[in-house]
Length: 217
Image (cartoon, rainbow, N blue to C red; front, side, top):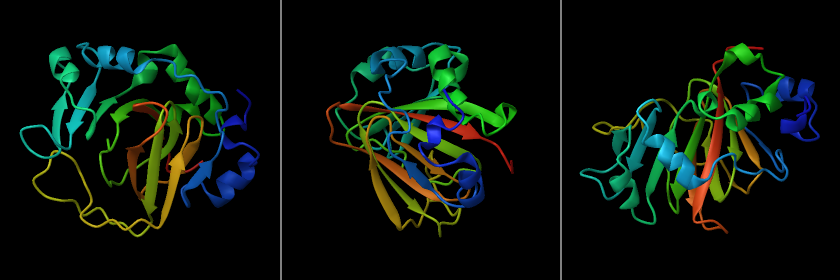
């Protein structure tokens, strides 16, 4: 991929000056014609492997709300999941799939050694990890399916107690976008955000989160 492919027509210099660690940015068609490196079934299969880190998040249907089950996942449990309100996060997929790792090539304007990992989320309708804050820069690339993303720049890291997830107590969306396959959202560190799968051509949405632990460029 070219140096500016992930930013569309936006020059790298303008992105770094105006958006990097300052403002969220949506890039429509950042990855035109994107084909998912792995299918949802293949990703779920990897989550069952002992050397692959994963988390299954059940907003409903678990023993308690927002229950988190760390991998390796149980294939029987995955097959029994309902059609909505759950998310499977598979971490460090760049270490397990060369095509997934190649997605990071589009971000050569950020030093590669600052990259944390590429996490892939698999979520059916209404699947979400709810509103949260990350301490790193993240580029969210939409694969198959559609997701609605919201951001709240005023959010503070005050989380709801008693949950397995760090879900913000207060979140009021300032902006909202629905991402289609190939679209991308950049979220700076410290900005509250929430992604939820919405109805689309695919029952499952795949999102590739390329994270950079980068205090500055």
